[in-house]
Length: 113
Length: 109
Image (cartoon, rainbow over all chains, first blue to last red; front, side, top):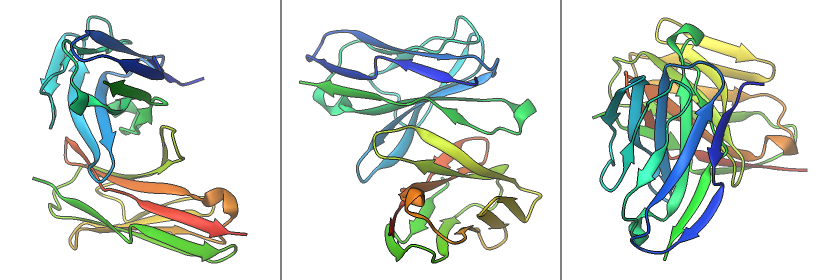
């Protein structure tokens, strides 16, 4: 089954404690991205990756890091989380060969206190 | 910068009525447009993708049209059912995805 898997799904953490949200896809998609969804602001792109070792900033990259060492994985790293990073995070993947239909993960609820 | 607007923000209809959801965008130089469904606390599920060269796409009770020149897309859902209750988002791809804020639909039994 085609899947984008995120972990953890729910996390409460404290300010400044580094955390990583993992994302893995099993469709061999070259394109992966991270979004955050906030009430009234909709979905905003954090980072994206066109392929292995190729990453670029989206609209709201401050406070986040990513890496793409393997095609299937695209972790999101919060080096020093702050309360304004409390949000619902989505990982997504797509492929030109599939007409760019986007597949989303189930989301990760992150609360920073 | 691409701006995507969805009106109305919320919609409540009785079961069986047809739904019309609107999406407008400011820059017509797009690659494609996608409609998504999002259930509360869940991820987004792709419903329809319209390539820039297409005028419409259909899947079952869903039909989406695209008018690039006027910067508009419309999602039609025929004979709505309570299970259609969700938030519907459109996303415009001009080699960077821009999302609308969504229309929250409630279908009353």
